[in-house]
Length: 218
Image (cartoon, rainbow, N blue to C red; front, side, top):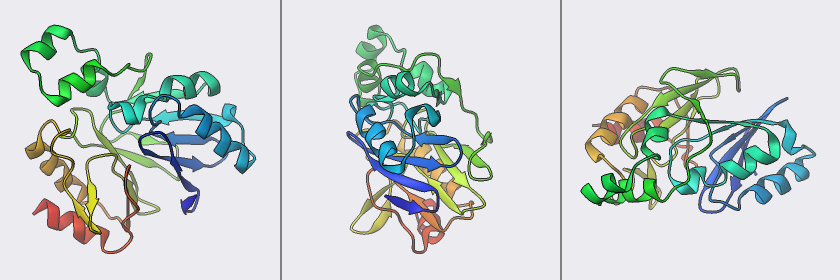
């Protein structure tokens, strides 16, 4: 379903992904393993092919966001992008999990990392929609990123934000590594010029989006 011009939401296994439809195709997040067939089916409905998908940008390293990256990349030839902090985290050793048996390290240990992902850095601009800017927003995970379109005035937030009863709220406490750091990251988002917030598990926020970010940041 097209949620904004050239931006489609795909309901993959475990999470929503966003497909940016231009001459080249860009997928933001990849769902759990087994999501590849859903992507392929959606592209066929659009009259597009898997080999037109050139990049898979992962907002963070949780399995419902990167689990399908291997199969989708293999079927399309797309390059996978992930922040280095999460790429390193996914190579955690069992001894590190034993020394810190909290949800973050356990989930990372059980998640298969992408093969040789291309690094994302704060301030990078992807050649998508006249420039899609990477904003490093650690807290939910060390390498969480959001993607801001200045020209279209939207931001894709991954799991840095949730919605509850129609209100924009903080990320899930159980699966967030550092809530204090996440709050500071939300403060960075509050400085952006946005009309729409696109979430990984909830409908878009299209009304007073910037005000909602500012209220959380304060």
